[in-house]
Image 1 (cartoon, rainbow, N blue to C red):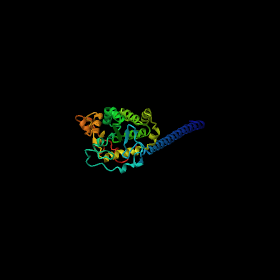
Image 2: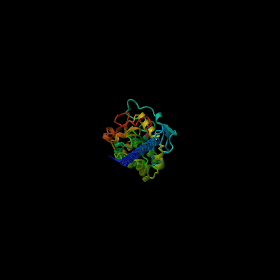
Image 3: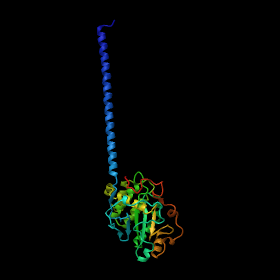
Image 4: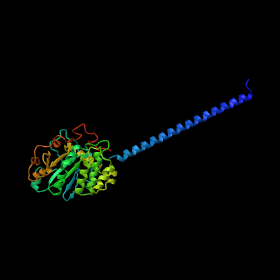
Length: 320
């Protein structure tokens, strides 16, 4: 028969074991509570960061017009430099652009475009207007094919070129919008040669998935512009939205679209030949043979013309 002393020892051991289990349970409980607390803090931090990022990237419905842009969003480059402060308005909104036509016209009905034959009648440089998207493969092909001629006819004073850069192909990174906004700031700071060189280099990166802001800033710096602050502030993004919405309302249903002396150019010749023909009062498309595939069938359609294009590119202001 067990003695009273043995029973006391057994009870003491049992109490010790129970206390150890209780202490272990308490530690596990505290660890679990601490883990839950850390998880809640992490979720709150992530939510705050996401909220801050979305808020910081929100693009206002309206915004200022860059010095380098006219009221239609075009950057006009001439032999004497980039035309500045030509807009008759200080602020624009995509809501004011109007709706795209139900049936796109054969020729864009855009403001700021000369009547055909103007160059010969006025003895002024031939007007070239180009709608482009920095994420458009056919725009990159256009640039590769015609950049040298463009620089030549502008530098000689034979022509001016006006770029209306749109965001038809905006994706999750809003590359089309960001690069177009960067182009405005570059044109604010540098001359025609540097701006054309910036554009040419930007198009060499088409098809790589889009550049981030730091990469765009670096390219701009190579061509004489410091655009880091402008990229952070995003002041010119509403202008990009407005330019794009206006282009759609004008019936520009694809990029690249180029007009030479008020005529949609079909790229059936060199650009130099088209400019020469226009200066002589001829149709620019009579300077060469049949239009190339890139002009007649290779243009990227605008969102109003093709459901395959990102729905973020619309007449409504985008956020990104």
